[in-house]
Image (cartoon, rainbow, N blue to C red):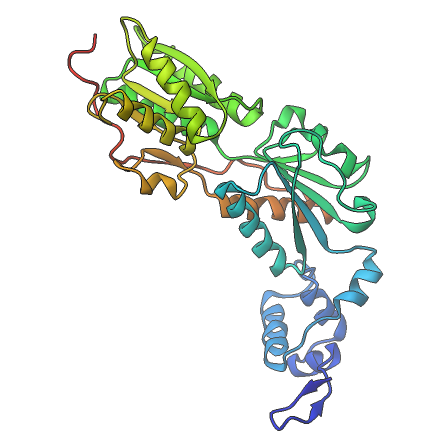
Length: 346
């Protein structure tokens, strides 16, 4: 029951009411409201059904529909950490897309980061329709997934996905854009401030940086690793710069924006100016990138679109369709932290 404008109870509109208002059958209403009309109902008719449903305030009985389908219409999004702004964007995009398809998304941080994720339910396979796992190895979610729960891997190695669908960002192109930008400015001596986390997403960055710089004679790359914190990045950068020898780096390529913030602090402690003495680049384009001075040259990752693409892929798998798996493009944002190398550098 619903309430009328005068406060009296009125009957909740039914699919029969929508069918009558739209001039179609109840079966057509069911197909449109269940988003299964394509190829079976004309687009103009589907639009007429949606308009009638909106005007009447009709909402399908999801509990009954789910019982018939044998589904919970709930997906689990597993991420390494909740404190990272990128994963918040992934969740937002996934949840918005899911809501448009009458799905819910439960967010679950793996307690051990990239390690095996423990089942947060008495039985994930009974509570869920499928899993999205972001920036993790496929075997990290085997406890949750079992042998049959649909799985879509985000930002993960397609070759090691254990048969799951994968949706990725074009990380290799992001590093290519950064490297080409710095090479074009004249840099030939690089410090790669790499994540200490063993993960496919960071391996791709290291491999592409090495491959791109190897194409330019006289180019050197030194790699140091750091935990993904500003303080650890500061310490790692300072050690690297103090032991750089006769060919110090003129540019630091960082695996993410937090590492870049640590590199900034190390440069300042050593009396180096960014970018006059040392260019610094990041990866992710977090809000931090615009908060530091000079603003950070970094690669923007479309986190919300990424989450939505992942949820679309999971729904496609559930419906027996082939998911869209082409990598999402990323964009270099050139700001004040990158410039030509100092002229005195050999």
